[in-house]
Structure formats: structure tokens, C-alpha cells
Figure 1 (cartoon, rainbow, N blue to C red):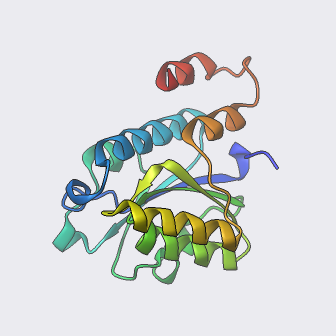
Figure 2: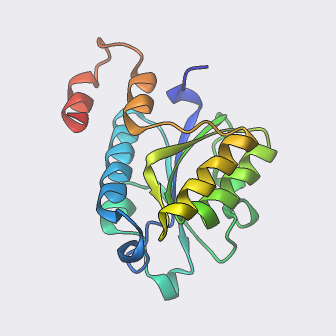
Length: 176
């Protein structure tokens, strides 16, 4: 099944200023999350961010925060336990996820969304953990649970569907 922009939400989990520096390959993960959120904005796909204990870990990176239509503060590792579900539009069936830590907050949120019947699409190139082994274990577990890992470029082209899409040239500039 193709990813459909009209049924999608981009969820950016905890790309916080105080957490990002300790995440493996953090600059690439941040860049890809920003790229995905920018593309989502061009295509009218809602972007929701979460922040784990923002009073301690600070807000999301400003490049991310500015692209989120809504940002939810939380203490639970699973964002579904603390406000995410009511924030999702009724049309949402496919949740594209970026963020960190892949094996904690991103994983628990994704598993919760899967349990509730959403198609969960974690971004391989926009999710990270402090240790690469933790990230790899998270993606293995997500695959086993039924999530379908994707990349920013896959999502962008599936959301557009056609080179005649009015946003194609702007999105192509972001991808190339």
C-alpha cells in the first residue's frame, strides 16, 4: 500500500536540543527530520512534535519546532499515553515517525500506535539513538510488530504520486 498524504501525519518524537548532541549521527537525523517536515508542510500533511520533559531536556530543536503545527510536552515514554491520540486528525491512518531515542520513546509510541490499528512508518534516515545497536534493535522490533520502515525520499514521492504535482519542483530541490 502506498503512503497517502491525505491519510498521513508526520510525528517528530523528542528531537530536543539537550538530547540531540548525544544521539549517534545527530546532524544527519536532524537534517532528514527537518527535510521531511518541510515536505509535509508543502503537501498539507499535519506535523506533530513531542518533547520529553522539556523543562529538563529543553524544547525541540528550533528548526523542528518551527515546522510542527502542534507540540506536546510529555513525561511518558509512549506519547499515546499522554495526549497524542486526541491530537491526531480523524483522517489519520498512516503515521510517519522521526525522532529519538529510537529504542525508547519512538519505539513505545510506535508500538502503541500499531496496537490501535494505525499503519506506522518509521523513517530509517530520521530516527536515532545514542548507541547504533539500540537503534538497530528498535527497527528489528518494529518490523516484527508490523511497522514498515521507510525513508524520507520514499515518503515524499509517495505523497506526491506524480511528477506533475504542483509541489514537485520545490520538493525535488529539498531532496537533491
